[in-house]
Image 1 (spheres, rainbow, N blue to C red):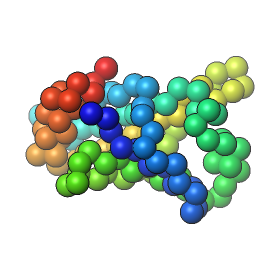
Image 2: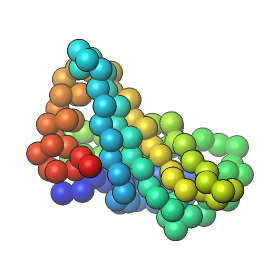
Image 3: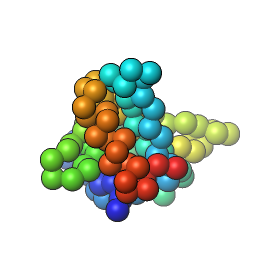
Image 4: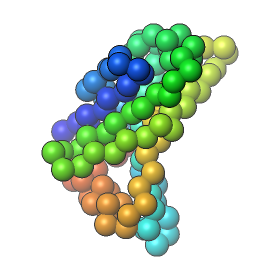
Length: 113
C-alpha cells in the first residue's frame, strides 16, 4: 500500500507521488505528531523553477484512504551545492486519536522507513 500525495501550485497539480522516505514523530503524550515526506531529486518530479518563482503558496495533500485527508503548506526544499536535493512536505496532526490512528495505519502497511 502506498500513500497518495498531491502537490498544487495555482491550478497545476501533480498527483500520486511516492515519497522516498517517511518519518513519523509524536510527542511523549501523543497529543501531537508530525509526518514528514521526503522526495529526493525533486527536479525529476516537476519543474522547480515554477515553484520558486511563484508568489502563490504551494499546497500538499496526503490521502490515506477515503476517510483521511491531510493538507499542508509547510513545503521545504533542501539545497546541496546549489541544486535542489530534497523536497519535504511536513504535516502536523494536533489530535491524539488522529495521531494514534495514523501511526497504526503506517505500521500496519509497512510505510515507515
